Image 1 (cartoon, rainbow, N blue to C red):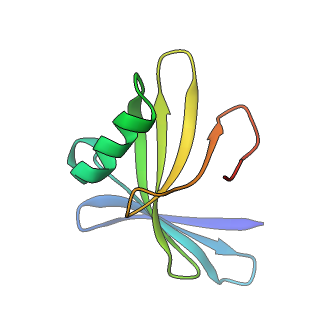
Image 2: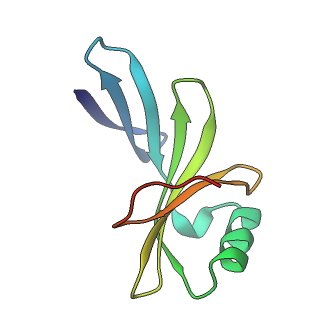
Image 3: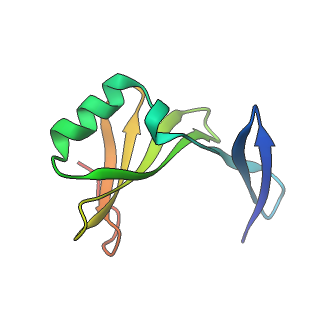
Length: 102
């Protein structure tokens, strides 16, 4: 079971996710898609032509790893892309499929 606490931090919506023991699993901050780093936007446009960013989150994991969780859509397909700060793809999935890793 997981528990969620939603709050505002530095003017942005944030969510902390906790396990049943009260340990923080991850912290997620909603990102304004128009203010994402240029290198991330360019990489997404190159790797997923024709897709638009629907939602983006800046995630800090329990292991203190930071990455982006980005939902993109081309009108027919919707994908979830996990991308590190250096534009490396950590994982991707079609929203209806199971998670895959390269």
